[in-house]
Length: 286
Image (cartoon, rainbow, N blue to C red; front, top):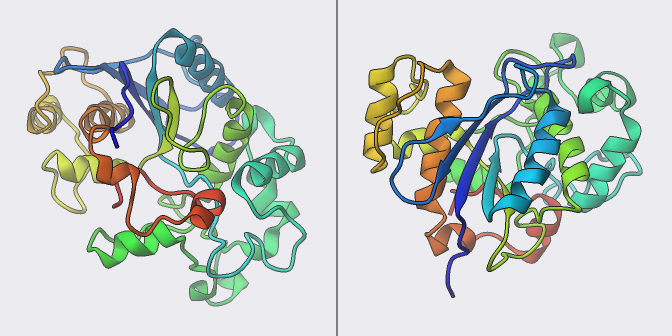
């Protein structure tokens, strides 16, 4: 077996915030080789989720590109038998993305209404919902990562606080539905030998690989950023000092450039066909 080959590597720091433009979205790109990454400017100054989808589809046609998004591509299913137990919903990733997109009419591919209205009882918003522990369900890849010492990732059912990933993930599923016809999404679809592909990423994995201490992944100045890039055998970044989101996207794109050659990351030991169809997997967890 050989690893898939790509000419470019793109990491998107994502946002599930309400509204039509999102300062939390950043798009970092690097070419094959050792050259420094760069940030891709939004068409209108600040990225919208729809603009990301349109840009991705066009970029995927230009050159074989590995795209990484930092949100959960599906909720847990293996341990509970359903994404939303007690509800009639699809039980495989692409069909569930279509369900989420059809249910939500939030602006700019948002999905807050799914959490706040359509399936409210499945999400934790505070003490009034009862014990938080009752909502802390994780996917197989997340449990696998935690068991290996990586730490406990957030669950898509926790909708409270700055660290929650729920809104971002369900908004991301709407984006996946729109780009899926144009670009394969791993591992819901098999590895392609050539061409573009989308994977789920966890920016903290890239930061740890770049030498950032556990729990201190954020890079808030150029020295921190370039030290991380150097640890990944990359030349120094020459642009203006990016914000946290931009720094995460830059370093993660460079990490993806290295990680894409590691066959073990494309064939994790715990990834089964059923998990691949239903929950997906975070690239970088092996």
